[in-house]
Length: 351
Image (tube, rainbow, N blue to C red; front, side, top):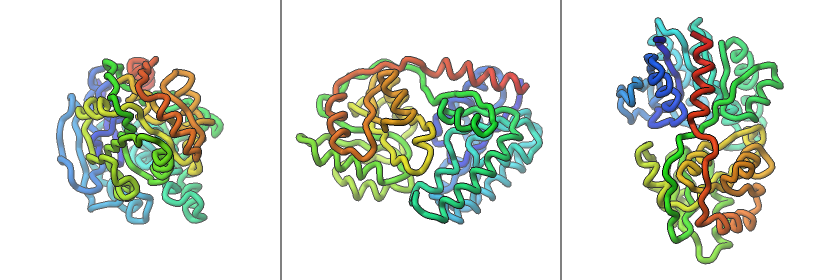
């Protein structure tokens, strides 16, 4: 049995990938603790979920969004975690902003690259010279630290290729859940977005499409994030119940007929291989998703028949796709069991 410390800069309340992989480790006989960052200081400091110990650190209220205050808060969080992870066998670092914790500890480090983290700072203003400069610095730092990791996994073949082009080998572990019983579709077209609300531009495009549709679909947006209030102002008729737990996901999924997952491509990760976890979560319950075309997510969506891919910015194509997939049922061809095998093979090589 190994002792493994996972580190993530969100409160893990929940973070499906973090908890899914931690459960796989517990089921394999390991002892796992997840060190999470309770930025808003609003979650239980300690709890146990399916045998996984969650330790949520508080270092002062810290905003999301790539500000100077965000960077300072994350630095304090990393130092707090470093003081608590003595005598572990592996440090499992989720995304680049936690990578220093493992590298500096001298413990074998598993770098889990969910996304191209350095692109996040560009999200609020992709054209900003300053944000592009900060993003470039973060990218160089991540690559220099990733070389020192004992192993690297990432969430898509697109990101795997991006890393390999820069001399770093990685194993793909996609964000796929287990298959569930397909849910009957609601009679009325209901567009759903279930996840973190990081930017408003996706919903500006959705509004343009909705304005073209008669009758106008219902909209359910569940989750929170820095753009939640802006999206609420943009779509006042949308139902926005706020954050949700993993146990509430089936009930929310039952109320939607199509998942919406289109994102502005300018900030980097969309064109470099991002795969929205919500596409796989929707497919697990039989729900189709509409995603960006001309990129990896569009290729996966259409090759596995998980929904429809449309060009970013084309409101009419989006409106047509939402209408045409309403009432259809899709099937998740590969689920979490394949990913579990891949993940544990990597971990076992480190022990």
